[in-house]
Amino acid sequence: MTSLRPDPDKVAEARDIAENAREATRAAPSFAAELFLGHLAEELVCPFPEQPSADAAVAGPLLENLEAVLKAEIDPDAVERDDEIPAQAIERLKEAGAFRMKIPEAYGGLGFSQTNYGHAVALAASHCGAIAIWMSGHQSIGVSTPLKLFGTEAQKEAYLPRLASGDLSAFALTEPEAGSDPALMETRAEPHPDGGWVLNGQKLWCTNGPEADVLIVMARTPDKVIGGRPRKQISAFIVESAWEGFEAVHRCAFMGYGGIRSGLLRFRDMRIPEENLLWGEGKGLKLALVTLNTGRLTLPATNTAVAKQCVRIVRQWAREREQWGGPIGAQEAIAVQLGYIASHTFAMEAFSDYAAGLVDRGGTDFRIEAAMAKLFCSEVVFQIADRTMQIRAGRGYETSDSLRARGVRAWPVERIFREARLNKIVEGTSEIMRLFIAREALDPHLERLGALTQPESSLGAKAQALLRGAGHYPLWFLATLWPGIGAPDAVPAPLRGHWGWMRRQVKRLARRITYAMVRHRAELEHRQGWLGRMVDEAVDLTAMALAMARAGSRGDEGSTELADLFCRHARSRIRERHHTPTRLDRAGAEVASNLLKDRYLDLERGIVKENHWPGGANPGA
Ligand SMILES: Cc1cc2nc3c(=O)[nH]c(=O)nc-3n(C[C@H](O)[C@H](O)[C@H](O)COP(=O)(O)OP(=O)(O)OC[C@H]3O[C@@H](n4cnc5c(N)ncnc54)[C@H](O)[C@@H]3O)c2cc1C
Image (cartoon, rainbow, N blue to C red; front, side, top):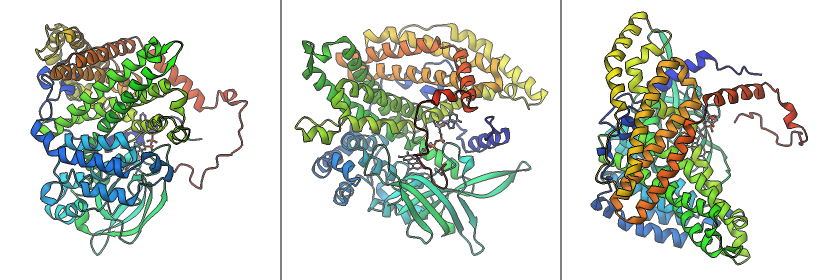
C-alpha cells in the first residue's frame, strides 16, 4: 500500500511548479482581494457596473438567431438519446456565429465581449447543455483564447481565421495521472535534432478532443537548472490532429451531457514545428492557468441559465400541483425551497455578470472574483437542481422521454440534475478553487509576514518580517475595529442593515485570517477545513454585496426582496460556519486516516464484493 503521508519532496515540487505558474502581479485593486484585507471597496460594486447598452446591442442579432437555431435544430432529449449532436445543427450554429464569438473581428470573428459571449453560451445551456460544452470547449478554453493572449502575429494569422471559419479546437491539460496536480504531467515534447519538437503522451477527457482540428497541448519540455536545482518545465503547443501521430483512442461517456465529444487522446512521435510553440518554453502551465482564469467564467454564465430554467419549472409546478388540499407551493417546506431557488438565482446572475464585466472593463485583477464566481455558481446550481428535483419529486426523477411517452409535460429535471454535478469537477474542482482563492487571499499577508511562516527562513529574514508586521498591523488592526456607518446610496433602504452587517463581518474575517496566520504559520496551508470555510464566507460576503448592488441597479421591489432573502441565507450560513469547531476537522481527518488504513472494514459487511466492476490494464486511467 502506498504511504498515506504526502511525500514532502513531491509536495514541494507541486507547490514550486504551481507558484512559478502563478500570476504574481496585481493590477488595480479588486473587491474580493480588498475584502480579505478587511476593506469593503464599495465603489467597486456600487452602483452595480451594468453592461453598457451599446455592448449588449452588439450581441442582440446573434442571440436572436441562436435561439431560433436552438429551437429549430436541436432536440436536447434526442441529443442525449442518440449521444450525438446532428452535424447539420453544428453547421447552423457555426453559420449563426456561435463558434467565433471570442475571435477578434480582424481575424474573421465577432470580437464579442466576455459578457456577450457568456450570455450567448448561457442561452445555449438553457436549452441543451451539450451544445454549450461544444461552444465553450472550442472558444473559452480552446485554442483561440490562449492564442489571442499569447500568440505571435504569425500564429494568430495562421490559426484564428481557420477557427473563425469552422475548424474546431480543444484544450488538453489533464492526463490520467495529472488531474489537479500538473507536476505529475507525463506527456513530453523533446527537441528534434532537425528543429521543432517530438510529442509523446496522452491527454484525458479533452472536450472536443476527438473531433478537434487544432488543440492546445501542454507538455513537459526538458528540465532547466534554476538556483542549482533541476526544475520541471511545462510548455504549450499548437497541435493539429491531422498531423501524423495523433490518435483519439477512446471517446468517454459521462453521467450527463450526451452528445459531447471528450476523450482519451494519444500523441506518438508527433513532429511539431518550432513555430507552434506558444509563448515560450516553460511558460505552458502559466498559459494554461491564465486561460482558465477567464475560461472558467463560462460556467457561472451557464449555471445561471440552468438555475433560471429551474425557477421557471418550479414556479409553474409548485402552483399547479395540488396535494393535501392546495398547491404544494403553499406548504412551508416547499416554499422555503422556492425562496432559496429564486433568491440564489438572482445572486448567481449578479456574480456572473459582475465577473464577466471585470474582464471587459480591463485593468483589474479578476482572478479571485472569477474563481469565486465559478465556485459559488457551481455549488449553488447543484443545490438548485437538487431542490428542483425534490419539488418535482417522482416526475423529477423520471426521464423526459418517459414523461413525454405517457403524455405529460417533459421538463428535463433529471437531466439538469445529472449535468449540474459536473461543474464542481471541471475547470478547477471546488476544493482546488478554495485553495486557489485562499492562496490569493493570504498573499498580501504572506508578502509581509511570509518569512515568519516558513521554517527554513533565516533569522535575519524573520526579524525583517517581524519589523514589517509591527509597522503595519497594530494600526491596521485598530482600523478593523471601527464598524463603519451607513451604506452606499445605491443600496436600497430595506437592505442597508445587511450592508452594515456585511461590513462588520469583512473586518472580522480579515482579523481572523491574520490571527490564524500568526498562530498556525506554515501549518495553515494544511488546515483545509478552516481555509475552505474562510473562503466560503468571503464568497458569501461578496455575493451579498453583489446581490444588494444589483437590486439597487434594478430598482424594483422584486429585486430587493430577492436580494434580501439571499442575504438572510448567506448570513445564516456564515454564522453556522463560525460555530463549526476546527476540532471537527481534526476528528474527521483522524477517522479518514483510520479508514484508509482499513480499520473499519466491518462497515463493508453485507454487500456483494466480487470484482464485478473490472478495471482495465491501467485502473488509474
Ligand atoms: C466532462 C469532462 C470534461 C473535461 N474537459 C477537460 C478539457 O477540455 N481539458 C482538460 O484538460 N481537462 C478536462 N477535464 C478534466 C477536469 O478538468 C479534471 O477532471 C479536473 O481537473 C480534476 O482532475 P481529476 O478528475 O483527475 O481529479 P483529481 O485531481 O484526481 O482529484 C480527486 C479529488 O481530490 C481533490 N483534490 C486533489 N488535490 C487536492 C488538494 N491538493 N487538496 C484538496 N483536495 C484535492 C479534488 O478536488 C477531487 O475532489 C474534463 C473532465 C470532465 C469530467
